[in-house]
Amino acid sequence: ENHDLDGVEHADTLLSAGKTLRIEFDVYTQGMSVGTQSSALAFRVQDANYPDCLYSEDLSIQVTVKVSPNHQCDTTSEEMDSQGNCVCKSQRVYIFSNCITIGALIGFVLVPILVLTTIILAAIVWQKARHENALWQISEKEIKYDSPPRQLGKGGFGVVFLAEYRGTQVAVKKLHGRKNGHPKSKVIQKGNHSSGSVDMTHKLSAQGKPTHNTMGRALTEAAPVDHIDPQEFGASSVSYETSSNPVHSAGGSHPNAFSTLHMSTQKKKNFALKDFATDMRLLSSLRHPCITTIMGAVVTSKSDPLLVMEYVDHKALSDLLQKSTVHLDGDTILGLVRDITQGVQFLHNTTPPVIHGDLKSHNILVDSKFHGKVTDFGISYKVGIKGTPFWMAPEILRRESDPTAASDVYSFGITLYEIYARKEPYAGEAPAVVIREVADPTVNRRPVPPSCMPNRVAALMHDCLVGNPLERPNMDEIVSRIRRFSSRDVAPIKTYSGTAQQTEDEEARQFEDLLRRFPRHIAEDLRDGREVAPENHESATVFVGDVVDFDKIAMGLSQKKVF
Image (cartoon, rainbow, N blue to C red):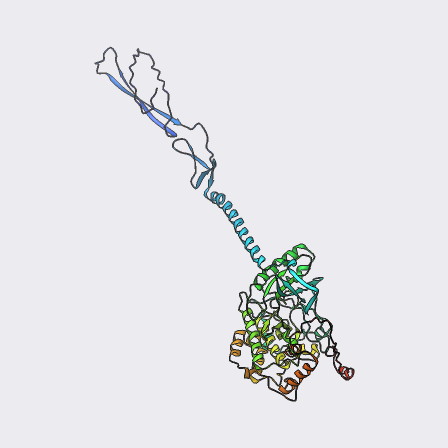
């Protein structure tokens, strides 16, 4: 007792002949390794009566002990160590009284970390988006209108009102949505009405290039344009879908964010609002002296979006061009052309690029110093208004491309024509015929440069109106060319027999005629094309003018000109 098998204990026992010596022993396994243990019991036998007898014998008895633990290990994940303890097998670790694999441990530890990280990042992104949205979201309560509201203009996108926002005069544009899933198309009348808008549900092109391989084929081959129905453009209204697929843009990959604001399901409304917010974060961040600043927008689930923009105290360039009393000399034209091209150049070089899609004189605002500002950029493709037919590039009329930087260049070429002709292109012609001839590469119809347009400007206009969009100059090149122009290069060539340019004597006579009828400050506003501000007087004389033989003159004019 009290010894392990390796211990030694000496004891003398007298054993009579024929007797058996019974040996009992206990094995204490504490400290012993689990498994089979062997040891030997040694005995020396001698005759007690004759201790000095030569007879003696050493006996050795081999004893084998199997040491087993008093509990069982989980054989799937545990094994016994040398001390009889259950330990984890190889490639496993002990966590919370369980042996788990290294892979499970990684998942056990990393999954909560990833979930927590995702929650934190989502909170950061949400907070950032909330902060960015706060930069452009405007409360409707902050917009104050006159009573009654003063309307500044109306177009395919909506109605524009003068308002006040935080003490600053602004222009508020109420954007039209869709009705029954289709945009409210502007009416295009037969005859002289050529400024209507056509719905082509396309998107911006982030690369500013044509989106289909059919473009090259259609431009290189004398392909017929049988798929263009003249009646479609000459009918009382026009609405069709482009054959090309939507292209990813600055405003996102979702089609028609503005117009889907009024779709039936809440899911589509939320979808559109998210897309609209993405666009507004970009558009409201754009700052350039040659584009109108978009301060923000009012968005509610119950009404159309309200776009809040800077107020330009003059009118659109198209309004000034229609006033014969407004004299445009070389300096004025050069400044306007530079402003237009630099504004569009800035939009095209934004990341991602912003394509205007409806560039024309109507979308160029002019301030009191005759500085031009490009407006309605990045809006037309969102509200279902996809440009004005006579300003559309032929590849768009053929439905082979979405609006691109090249199509904006084409529209700028038409705008150059407007500035010198002081009228819309193809005035008085049937829209259906004109559109088909413009789109047909075998006809390649384009406006004829006005006789007052200088040669260098006419050459630039020609390059912008090239049928192949890949051969048109980009806005960087156009800006570079215009920088080399002087006021003499762009000054209208005077034609005394025509109406394109008034002589100085005629302008002076017209101004004297205005002075005979109005106070000087009003006459100067009318001469310079500024809007005459209303005045309050206790007493006033009302001047009524008339046109001699107006009824006879009107008989030979179109309804639009009579109006």
